[in-house]
Length: 378
Ligand code: SF4
Image (cartoon, rainbow, N blue to C red):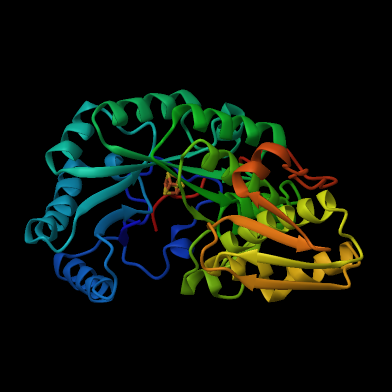
């Protein structure tokens, strides 16, 4: 995974405001337009940080509809980024854009400037959810855009959201299945949050929309992560990156936000694996020892040791020990109990034992939340 230098374009090129979107909160305190000097300063700041890592660096234009901007504005930004590519300081350029904004002219411009990756804001592949979310495009637009990008050799990412208005376990599973069929090069996955100053916030305050709870969001993302991993599609991010603006009181009205959301999902997978082994071995009430790759120990324990406490309680274990085993493959769990040994690979869990993954949320409103549109620029 490259180090990404994010440059936020703050809703530029967006034809309307999607119900959940508030770039002022998700991007943080950021200028609406970035002057050349400020751009250079920002990139140099990131390059100083990236020097401590050996990973390649890419400049990314996020937070808007890049190919929906005026072509002159696109060229200006791509030209500024290309300076760094030409110097060899940066490996490549990526942009995020809408699935209905990639015409021939826009594609030609991206190719001319050597844009290597396009991240497409799909959010869902269910037309009803897209309509309720005021996305203004269809699932067919996503399918077409992914095909065009792939046919031109551009690495393609899909952004997906779970818990949008009208979403359900079946609909989310459908989106995940269709995404697997499209086989993008990468996926980002975000639970829907109710951010201040959004259409969704208005609907939430009127009681017309209720977000997923944390348990449901973790379960849904766990399901998706497992499906994507099995299909060989990397999930490069789960949950919004926290920003100073996002952390301010009142920025998030409701929804399953956690600054380390992915770690909750990984911990949940390990919990399922440990439960499976304990049940398989009929080790409840006994003494068990788990062996893990050193880098998996923290995820296995869970936040504040939550997994260990829950396993002890759920299976009335006399003792539960965890040992780091350097030779062990990442993602695998070995358990010893009563002189016997069991091993479980993460891939095997995916095949055999995906637990119920979407909590029952009584009264979760599926209504249409569209109200008076908000301006799409600050
Ligand atoms: S396309 Fe929608 S979600 Fe994306 S930046 Fe524009 S308004 Fe926000």
